[in-house]
Image (cartoon, rainbow, N blue to C red; front, side, top):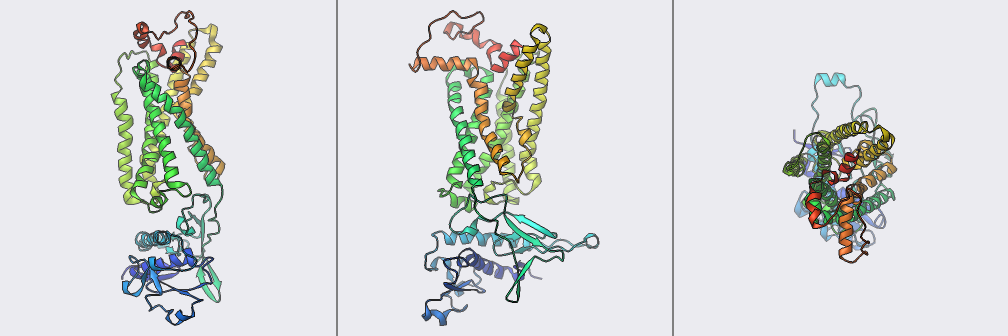
Length: 525
């Protein structure tokens, strides 16, 4: 028995399905809506879509499916090339959008993927499964716009396909609403009866545009822009001041901030280049182009993982700094190899598997293959967060033990310890434990989560750099050198103060107490 695919209740061979499904894409996207509806006579033919102008009486006799000049289809989808004209030659009034053939092709390709990957897959039926199946299931089908797998009785919600709007990419679609299709208890898709004929029906009324996604995108752009603006000077100062870049802790800070910075810049670039209305690369996003998949993978997978690995490096280094063992000349090469290399390896393996198993929509959304997303992305991130939570607990135990040696200032010291723990939450990424469960039905939760994600880098830059006394003195010295601020009058430094004169630089670099503001607090506690 030859393979066949189901289209709106009818079965077609593979060649017929490709041709007729593509013709329906053109019909449903453009010619069944104003201003073309009623103006043109249309008919689904075996080789394409018949399109005739009702106002042109001279063509009425030629308006038939065997006239290749009146039947249109994409050359790569039509059944018999000599029986239709290329879709690019379709000329109607008013003119179709410039990209109408390209947009129609996206629908045709989606139908072809549905036929190859869903409709031709027949579930294995055994005596056991027949006995255990209580209710019949609705068959897998293509309704003309959307692919629906074999389903149990109930109402199913699917994402609105972007090509149905016809004029451009829509980025203001509400992702929480979508296509609704009902599978009835008797194992058939819900149908409506019009003029005595029954036709399967899908509810696309929720595929409307709103402001929620636009607001979410604007909030994300603002948050990540703030982070980029805050981090860039911090990374520049650390990279250009020997007092800072010679200390291991500031090297780790710089790598963490660099990961935040590049992640923020790629988010901004991807939104502006691929996503916003009228973006120059929206056609690449639309066609699932390699460049689109690459850039979104770099943003959403690689730099997401590197951020988590460097947050773990912060936790590991701080714990080792507070441990009773001495680490005078710690080699940071293992940190760099692990924190940049391990995410690269995971991302490469993820990309290979995603290409073969779920290659759709530029890989922006998490894969529908649950173990792929959890095994290479969400799972490792969760493990890293939990490890940092354990490290924070151990660090606080060390700090509390030191507090007990000075009972006269116990209350004040506990306050400092609590403040230090709060500061470590964004540095260690522990706030993700509060937002790891995504409430898909709440726009507010999604926007707040994106803002927290975007502003984390800015918060970390203030904690590890702008509030650090060493960093502040380097910044003040640079500003005075360039005449941006007036030099402060020389005052006698209090005992234990840090000088930045050349003769005291070596002593400063050997001081563990000023390696970081975390170290400062720990030593004082």
